[in-house]
Length: 71
Image 1 (cartoon, rainbow, N blue to C red):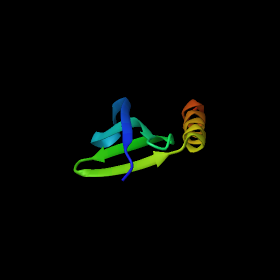
Image 2 (cartoon, rainbow, N blue to C red):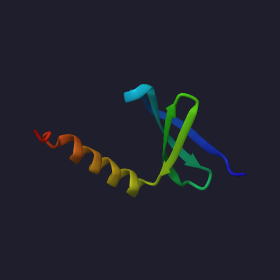
Image 3 (cartoon, helix red, strand yellow):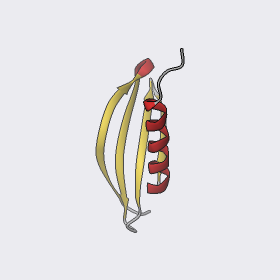
């Protein structure tokens, strides 16, 4: 089993009592991933993203957040 190094980047509360944690994961091989952990009560969703996917997802979320709301 390969070793991985974790470093917490950010933690914050989201709507409906959810907790979000972002971690940098560095594998023994040198591969780097962004780990997204979402906690909803006792349920966890964990998603590892590569740099390309994290960049694309981040840009999509910023584009959505920057758009004015429709009346």
